[in-house]
Image (cartoon, rainbow, N blue to C red; front, side, top):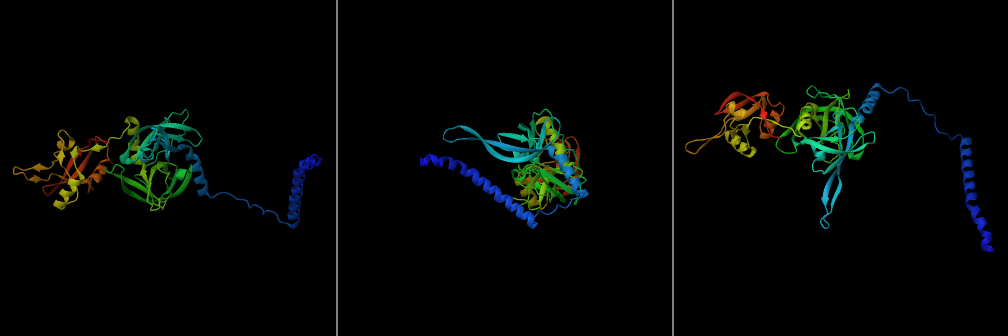
Length: 373
C-alpha cells in the first residue's frame, strides 16, 4: 500500500517543480522590469555608404556565378584490393558560359579521379574534365545543367592600374562563397608554372585575402567584371599574408576557348630545339644572356627565317648557333622565359627576334607555328 500511495505523488512532482520555476522566472522578470533593467533602444542605421552598397550589390550580383568544387581521389586498399573514392580537396571556380563550362585552376583538379560542383542555389552536380593547360594553371570542367547561372562579364587586364579595387569570391578553407576585397598592389609578376618549363606571365598581385580554397575563383574589378583567376599566395604560414596572385583575364580569354574547343591549349612555337642545361653552359661560356638555338627543325618557320643552330666544324669543333636575346624587344634569359614571351602571341602571327650570330646583333622576323601543349 505504501508503494501504491507514492505513485500519484511521484506523478505530480515534475509539474509542480515546473510551475515553481515559471513562477520564479516571472518574478525575476517583474523585478527587473520594476527596477528599470531593460534592453537599450536600437539606434536607427540610416542609409549605407555608397561604397558599402556598391560592394553588397556586386557580391549579390556575382555570387551565383561562383562554384564550390570538391574533388575525390581513387585509392586501393593494400590488403583487400578494394577501390575507394576519398575526399582530395576543395577549390573554387566560376561559370564561363551558358553551356555548363566552369573554369578553375589546373592544380585544383590535378590528380583527382572525379569532381563535383555545388552552385550557390544548392544544386550539386557531377563534373567532367574538358581539358587543361598546366602551363597556365587553368582547367575547364563541364556540368549538365538545365538552366545555368549567368556567366561573369569579362573584363581586360592589359589596362589595369596599381591601386584599383579588387574583389575575390571563393571558398577559402571550405567556407563557401566568401568575399574579400583589396587593391591591385602590383602588376606583371611572373611565377614558375607547375610543369616547370615556363613562367606564368603578367600575373596580377593583390592584397585581397586569398587563402587555400580560393584557388580557381574569380578576381573582379569594381564593375563586377572578371579580371583574373586567383591562383597562388605568397605565405610562409600557408595563410594569406597580403600577397596573392591571379592569372590575368587576357590570358584566360585566350587559353580557355582553345581548351573548350579541343581539350588542350596549343602553344605558339618557333620550331627550334633548346635545352636549359646546355643553354646555361653555352651562354656562360660566351658571356651572354639569352637562349641558344641547338637546331632549327627542317620545314619549321625558324628554318624558313634562316635561324641557325649549333654547327660542327670539319675538325670536330662546335660552333654555337644563334642566341635569342629578345622577342619583340622583351629580353629573354632562359628557355622558360622564351616560351612565356612567345605565349603572348597567337599561332600564325609573326614576332621579331633579336639574335646574336657570331657576335653580331641582328633582327629576324619569324612566323609562329603550332607547338605542344
